Length: 313
Image (tube, rainbow, N blue to C red; front, side, top):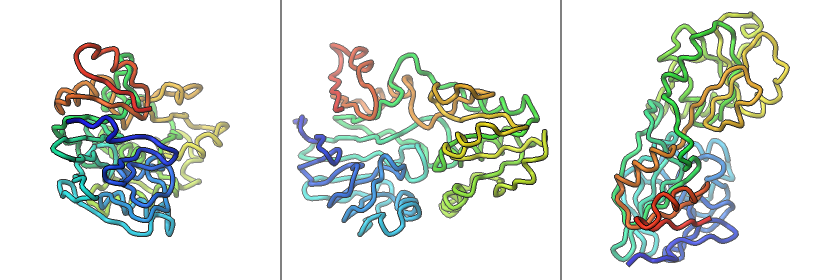
């Protein structure tokens, strides 16, 4: 029997009281099961952190001594127990080390997606579909109006000009994927990385997901116009360079709002869009779908009378 209270929210985040652990808590807890290392999912300071090797490496790099007191690291497909709940990580395709979290309790399977994507990405493990009775899915882009464009078509926009490009992107996951895409589809361009992205990219290389050729940022190079350089920077740096000269401003994201007042739109997202969420539901074959991290109302309307959709947040 599916337990309606298997996962509940409190002030610290998403809690499983049957296993006495939190999933992607928003603050330090006794037991944290972490799906991936982005800051909105991987808070520091927990007593025990359960995660994949890639997530552990990135959390320890970013959070240093505050990453967590004890890391319990499990490979994909390796099951472990917290009290009476059995857990298994499977690739989520979002970033390096990102994991779906399969939880089994009294014969019922609950699958938490965290953030995930189905689009090809050579810089992380590809998403793996897993059967479950309950799918707990992110709904960041769960809107019929949001269909992500083909990534190759988007990145090839950079081939339409030889101007130097100042490209905004998140340091973890997105920047490594962009390096890979530019190397593959825009080989004439030279990629320069902001210093904050270098250590994370090194971890990707340590896990055999080498993004491709790139160099640390060189101010002299970027001063030379029309050389085909792409300088990838984090959002705060991108925003502070709003008066940058002799460059095209581009922000790589699935969010329309981040493309305003830029010189080129580059819709590259690391989340599932509407069609990919529907495809995931089709492959997981759940009896119920619980939604979080976004707006689940469109899914609720779409499946009305066919499948129970429960909005957790």
